[in-house]
Amino acid sequence: MARFEPVLLRNRGVENVTALRVYESRGGYQAVRKALKMSPDEVVEEVKKASLRGRGGAGFPAGVKWGFLPKDRKRTLLCVNADESEPPTFANRVLMETDPHQLIEGTIIAGYATQAQIAYIYLRVEFHEQFHILQKAIDEAYEAGYLGKKVFGEEYSLECYIHRGAGAYVCGEETGLIESIEGKRGWPRIKPPFPAIEGLFRQPTVINNVETLCCVPHIIERGADWFTSIGPEHSAGPKLFCISGPVNAPGCYEAAMDITVRDLIERDDMGRGMVAGKTVKAVLPGGASMGILSADELDMKMDFEDPRKHGLLGLGTAAAVVIDQETDMRMVLRNLARFYGTESCGQCTQCREGTGWMYKIATRIAEGAGRIEDLDLLIETARNMGMMPGLSICGLPDGATYAIETIIKKFRAELEAAINAQPPGRAEAVLSVLN
Ligand SMILES: Cc1cc2nc3c(=O)[nH]c(=O)nc-3n(C[C@H](O)[C@H](O)[C@H](O)COP(=O)(O)O)c2cc1C
Ligand code: SF4
Image (cartoon, rainbow, N blue to C red):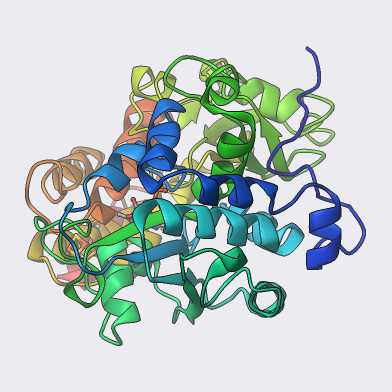
């Protein structure tokens, strides 16, 4: 297969590229100059034509989202979602630390297209180094006149601030993020109204992921047709993929969305195969929340369509974790259940209690005190707490549902065998203590 010419990561490894002059020497800040000569509506139309789908997890088309803003609005705010808290996901981090000006350029273009006055970059709190890199780049952009009053000497003005989170998964959810920037507990809001109508400080607000915004300068510079020429229909443009677990070269790689999970693991310009002595048992291909694949599903395409055909929620963050043959799936089940149980914000009864109970049940299975009926109990709990059945405010429990249910469906034989191999009477003994 021909090697993919990196677009989003083209500056990775270039010496001192976090400095504005180096970024500019490589063609940076040309796209924004071009965008500022277009009308805001023309920029929105170009992004719509490119069919740029959001990279934050849901895959919603960015241009369409920008078009939801009320025409008669007085103020517009832009939030850059740099919370990146989905387990094994680190593509936004790589983008911010290797090429911060690319994100700033995308932010200015999106700000101009939506006529935003202020952009807030909501940054995951653990990103200390990235905070300093990004802040320095923002300061340089202000000094050069690319941010602040009359950007690039044009009529348009944009202020840009970094807002550091406090370490909660749910603050990556767009309305949890809004509440957090407002200085409140990061509790997601009931929708509608959607942020485009009433968002941050009750103003019309656009929220986009870091990677989504990093695609924007390239669309403006090279055109929507170039963007749609990359990758399969409905999954246009360059995409970052993360891979971790026992592969020889874990990392963040760029490709079109026609690659498969197997490519990601095996290709010599990606994961370079499993480490010696390990074989693939399962893969969580889209972060934790999309569900799991078994070893015979590795030919699934990493695009916006194929994951659904494998019973998954979607492409998610396109961050794959490989699980090897020696891993006990009871531990995977417990690990994931613990994540959702501890990250639920607790506002909705079904999510708070459901994720909590799933963690308890998964724990007793992991500790060798499970019962066969616990597997169906987990599925029943998982199906009765999410936003999709209309029982909760945000999508966190739907992620839990897909993670837990797909493990049980695809690895039921192993889980049942482990439960059946427990010493007789253990489940009853543990349950009597718990009760
Ligand atoms: C529990 C939860 C956590 C989320 N975390 C993130 C996150 O860390 N980063 C992100 O970009 N989107 C996250 N999202 C999705 C956002 O709500 C939103 O869809 C996204 O930021 C929109 O950007 P995009 O359209 O550019 O993808 C999360 C959603 C949920 C339900
Ligand atoms: S669904 Fe869960 S995480 Fe989302 S708002 Fe409700 S309780 Fe909080």
